[in-house]
Every structure is written in structure tokens, then in C-alpha cells.
Length: 320
Ligand SMILES: [Zn+2]
Ligand SMILES: [Zn+2]
Image (tube, rainbow, N blue to C red; front, side, top):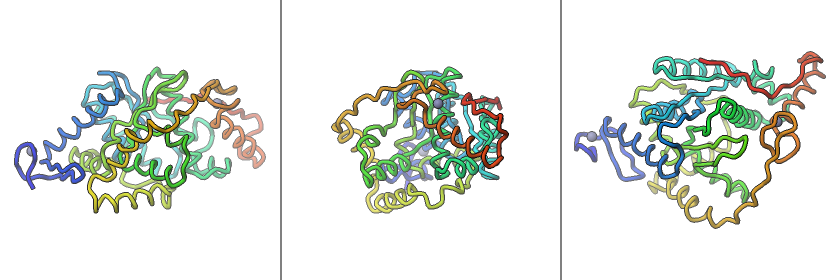
């Protein structure tokens, strides 16, 4: 196999798109494709400040790298989730990446901020870990973006992630979830815009970029992810992809372009300000504040928190 650009021996085959590249031209292609996705979907303005949610995994570090190379002012945000050694190593890898490249990194430590990391939070909230974690991440990322004056947040979700979410939403059909999914979620008052510049790249394509760029990332997956439904969906889709190259991309894009626009446009839900934190919610108190208030009540009963401790939703941000 030869590189499509220079004819030298190819190092990466992008089977789904019938392309093959040498190392240098793969790296070029990947950056240009990201830029194309950003322009086509109007994700970012040229040179704009963007908050990049970075876990230390291959996708988010590659995204931070590419956005910086494309001239965006990409500031990282890492949330220390308190999931044992996994979270410690995630923070270390992310800090090393930022340090080596002289990039600005913001850090929020869940346990320092609110008293409990994901494992304790899950057991005290009665939610499964991934649900408590996901809710915390979405809320904290948005609050930091708004407080620090970012219009937009970028995340490293790739094609496999997005196709798996779509597949899951079709297996357990919910029209609301289907009409909301997409590579760009526009900003609203108190809500930063959210964009996913890697949504057309498969996990393998992102990994190839990360490896060829020599980016050091955390290989291990979150211990809570084992047995997650999303892994089953990814496996099923990848079995189809193996027999039918391009299936995942056609599935996601076909949905976004042809089916989603025909779904009954959801009545714009009126967002109100949370009575506790002021951030957008559909109810009186947002789910983040409700979760933590319940956790504090239980923690006090079990004497894990002093009686006088009061929940404060304001996120403390550290630099570096
Ligand atoms: Zn080449
Ligand atoms: Zn709230």
C-alpha cells in the first residue's frame, strides 16, 4: 500500500474512506480533516479561546494538540475525579502534556471542591458511578467555562463514541435524546457551547494520530467503565465495520443529515436559573445541586461530614 499523497510506503490505512498515508501525510491529513469539521459545522471562530476538557486519554490529548496546532487558544481543563490511582495517573499525564508544550491547564479536584470523589459520591447519592461522574463532569466543565469567560467547550468524543450513543438511543428509543445528539450544541444563557471536532474520526484513527505524534497518554481505562453498555455497542458496530468499511460514518452522518432534521423539533424547553447555583435547569434546583445536597444529608447521618458543613456549588479552580 502506498501513500495517497507522495507514493511512499503507507503507514496508516483509513479503510473506511479508502485512503492510505505515510506518517507525515497522515498527520497532515488528520489536522486538515479536523479543521474541515470545525469549519463545516461552525464550531469555532479562528483563533478563538476554547476550553478543552482533557482526561489524559488519547482522544482529549490529541484534540488539545490539534486545536493548538490550528491556532486556537486552547486551554485545558482536567477534573480530578478521585477514582484511586487511575485518577492520579490521569492528572499526572495531563500535567506532563501541558508542561512540555507550555499550555495552560486548569484543574478542579472533585474531592477538594465538594468533599467526595466519584466512588463515595456514587455510594452516597445512590446513583451508579458513571451517572454521578457524568453529571459532575458536565456541570463542572460548564461552570468553569462560564466563570472563566469561554464561549465554547471542546471534547474529544470520536466517531465510535457518537455512533455508540446513537445506537444506544435507537435500541432504547427516546425521541428527545435522538433530537439532541450532535457535534455542535449551541450556547445559551449560562450554558457554554459544546463542540466535538473529532466526531468523524474513528477511535483507531485518533489513536494512530496520537501514536504517530508521540503523545504520551494514559492507556488504562476507567475501572468503572468495565461492562458499560457503550462498550457492547462499540463492539457490535465494529463487527459491522469490519465487513462493511465506512458503515459507522454512514450510520452517524446519515442520521444527522437525513433523519434528525425530520424528527419533531423539540419544543424549546424553557431553562430557569437553579435556585441554589444560578446555572440553567428545567426544575427549581438543578440535578447537580440536588445530588450533592442529598449526599451531604446522608454523609452527615453517617458522620462522614461535620454537621456545620454546607454544600457550596461554586467550583474552585486551580492553575497547572
Ligand atoms: Zn506521504
Ligand atoms: Zn444548581
